[in-house]
Length: 234
Image 1 (tube, rainbow, N blue to C red):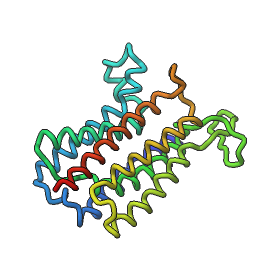
Image 2 (cartoon, rainbow, N blue to C red):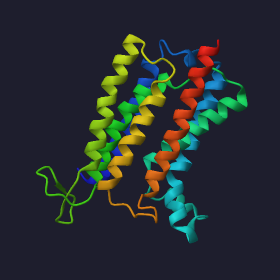
Image 3 (tube, rainbow, N blue to C red):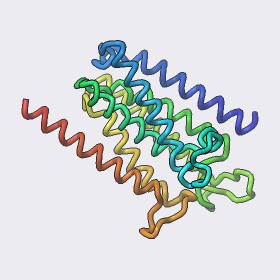
Image 4 (cartoon, rainbow, N blue to C red):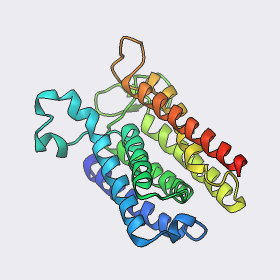
């Protein structure tokens, strides 16, 4: 099985798992009882917000071609900005439509399942690999140099959160905040992982994606604080 085929198969499976998980875990999710049009608009906003944001960094890096359809539909997407774009897309949609119901809890577990599978596809394709390493689990992605299998590190991270989120859902812990906690944890994890990934450094010594996760985590923390304060005020 070629890397690109395995990557495509994993991406399709990840999408199917997300949709199935969303359906199965919607039993106690208040957002599942929203009017149909609200749910449709939330889905559209998440899709386009995530898709455009996932592609945007690569388009901007290829500035002369950023207005080319070929650039937008070629390979090159990033999970970090995609997650942020999807999240913000949903929040903007909810603000416009006046939706007050918290929608994150029903998405957290299916998202973690999907990303666990999706990162396996990245590993099979050889993209998103890490820096050279002498550790025994270093993997040769075709250039003859053992590297950190950062895709597998991420897959394990998301798999661990599948277990955590499943326990929280069963015990009804951290209701309305599960997605935020999961995404904040991912931001911290990704910030650390960037030190062993092959990414250009900015003048600050940090990568572009480290700045992205710092901004995203700050937004999530502020939103979580505001939500908890609003709860106590009731």
